[in-house]
Length: 459
Image (tube, rainbow, N blue to C red; front, side):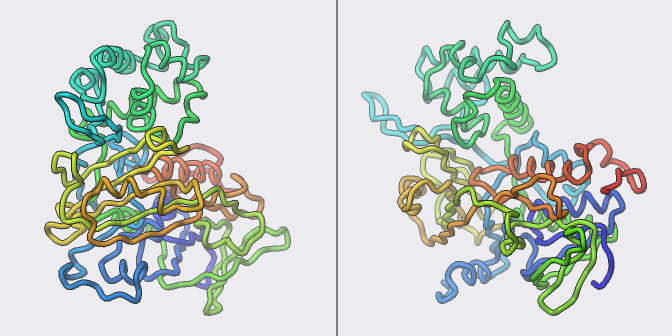
């Protein structure tokens, strides 16, 4: 460890491990340290023993849950969008070859429909993602079906680079709300389009230029066309396999990994730039740059700022979620307006078919941005949707972001993971850090070849 490295990375979360793999690809000398005895950090997948030790250390594990080898429970629930940037990185780096993938069986949205003369009360509905699905969706009235169909047809033909597809609607001047109004879409339709299709966390996007949302809706439509059921995929044996895959890539390229290594401080030069790290056992490793998650800089002033909290509730079930057509995996998005909130609530469901539970068991995780002084009460309604819950594991986490994109001390801090049910915001964060390090955006095509010696200089 007492050597000089181009970059030292603290933590083995998804972002940190992806960056370790990418940096090693360009011939950088990398050292990765983690205080935990397992890979993954916040994005780890825990076996039964680690799960109970983390959340309920004083309780005995029920014998009915079997052995550790049956369980890989994600601490942070996320699905992977088929057409998103994370899949591009996985494919280009060939890390996807280390993993097996399953298609998430369904994507649903919460919308309360009262009992009618010919229909029962219903809360959960499949997200219509094409013009044809819009025509048969029970979410929409007869007139709204046609309006939504017309909107989907417009988006499918829309191309940001071809003005003749804009239909005289300038997406760079008009807001998304103005586009919705042009198609006379009602509020309920706007809710599921913005939150369950464009995958926004709240309604702030409505005031932004429309092209940003049109691109996201088009990406969702293209992603769902790949498999038909859902635009999301999930790795067999849990999300923890993704950081492990990039760790393997980094190791193959000469990177060094050390678990159970607690870093307690940084070493700075005369210009107050980081030049090394110090571990709890007194060892020092030297470097030019450091990348780390927020937990490693809590003691440094003005490095990070708290922007909120997220509550996550991991639930063990013996049945699929009601009203989801008995699916073994799905996503449910509860748009903010449905529960009079400022942001959405998310539910992710996986099961024994994904190698993450004992046979016949399911894992549902509810995630929400904390908005009140009573976070548990905020997720009461989502928990009711799950049916009978056998076990619950609750954690409330602070959300941190870096105070500087280009820090003078060369310590680059990744952001905390938000409540969303997908990795798009997390991937955008690591791509931004990459750009801050290199001074240019990541070239996905360049990942196909060994660029050793051709990469830009950090300095």
